[in-house]
Length: 223
Image (cartoon, rainbow, N blue to C red; front, side, top):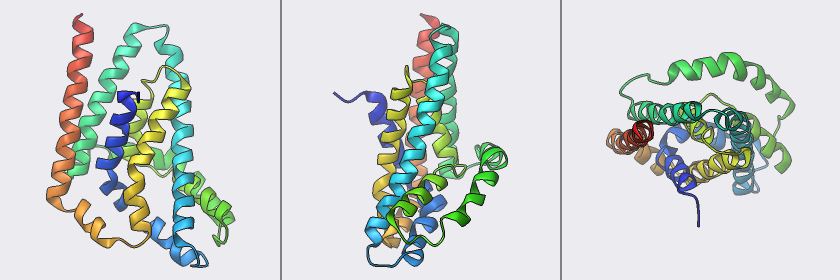
């Protein structure tokens, strides 16, 4: 039986995929111009496999560290639960575009990580092979993204590095349908997922789930 946490991560990736299209859709689409155009689906899939690999490594890293502290402190574990709930509320508002709730975090990620990693782009151009497409996706998997950071807060609640990696794997799989479609030029999906009412609906689901997480965390605190 699949862990409910993995299912939730998949659903979050699926719901938030409209944001993924806005952030990375242009990059995925550009692969069709940067490659030999003989197998755009293969290159787009390779790019997304690389992106998922970076997510998985990040999930294993944060879960591996946090699990060491959580195993020694019940309060640390409880704090992570509240942390995840709050971030879920923030990403819901972010997707609805009702406020710049996570832009500060993306700016921090850009300053600390992305501005250094993006320089590696020059070693991957032109993207004329599948391995290069995978590496390109792995590099862009570290692009500062509030949705990914929120998923990582879930990964932090994993009891092992493997569980954290699993959370990010299922999150990445949730984003695959939209990202593969946009990579193949499905502009209709792009417009649909980024329609104001669609963003409000998807953001509302995440907000309600964030409230649910906070209720569970509060129940643990009381009992």
